[in-house]
Image (tube, rainbow, N blue to C red; front, side, top):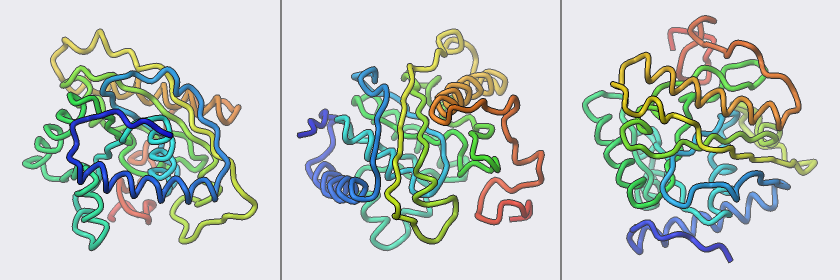
Length: 254
């Protein structure tokens, strides 16, 4: 029986999350074999979890892994998702945090994330911001949101890499490929060392340095899982004329 650490959520939030988690765990256990690596080293208190992003089914894999190891993960999710019927209700009532693209509301998202961390919760942030554009599915350049939250709150940043779920649901595919049964490995590393940056002014260069350290840790974990050498330079969509959002990412106008 998984013991979920108390994070001060309401009874309703815990109930909705538990029902969803039960459904997801049952489904994922049917669809995949799994290996969890390094989860015994996770911090006991609040932390920011930064996974790589391969495919649209990643949140279910990450949530399955974290929940199975005794925690209730919280995602910073696009605000537009909260407007989708049923899905929006589930997101709100399971304690997920909407993120607005407008700078006016961005501070509210960070404030809510900080509350979760202070209560000992887990915040999941994909530092790439979207599915990797790298043609070989290596982690691409990161955005500074996770670094900014870490430096503002002092919370540890835990890198995560997973490999195998892209075979169940290839990037931007419309249907899963359940047969033969796939195996997914999820690995977490030690918290990224940001100590020397925490007292520095949060300038662009400091945020970029912190982000680079986070992406490097994620890439190293994925290289271990793949038993391959990662590219010397991370993929940068802007250098390849690709948009930052949308499925048709080879069209920079999207």
